[in-house]
Image (cartoon, rainbow, N blue to C red; front, top):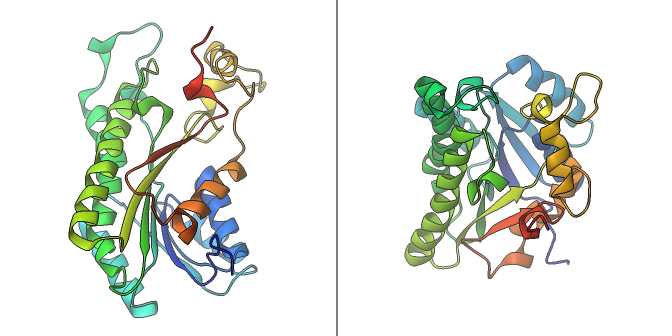
Length: 270
């Protein structure tokens, strides 16, 4: 059997109905995994579940706020009832808000403190809390994996996205800290890693990167110019690294943040 095999693994993924999340869920199911999806929009979740059940019978989900511990406790109870344990937790939920973005005609002093707090809460606490509530469902006699979603804005300055950058930088530190904590306490039983997607067109960034006629904005053009592959990523191009990190193929990896970015993080711009 391949060390990349994820058949039968019980995967919980937050943000599973977003552009990147949907593609990941479909891929996991096609590989024979079992999937529980967390999202905010119950109508969207139910519609997608109808499609996903054509791929696999063992897919279900919960709609609520991943920064709400009470909601997560309900999720935990539902998972225990259906599965007893889980093998993988993918923290893909995240996002941005207009007031946490510095507009071209404004400055740092115009940022909304309220929106900055909300963005920080969603991206950092929306990663920490699901791990806090659900990670003790990992079995004691098996190897399990936490996979967080980082960003290109975590370790370098990507202009304008102040709140998102701060939060994703914190996600990187949380990933490394928790990897060491779990390795110290539990040995090789729980690994913690992160993926750092480059620029993929999603619901969150489409208006920043493309115009209404689908041509590139000046920001979009700048990103493409600084991406050696000369294009945005495709959602399915994250599937391989996710499978790798949740499979035995990455059994000696923990505390890493892996870019999937068409060379963006390697390029100096000259």
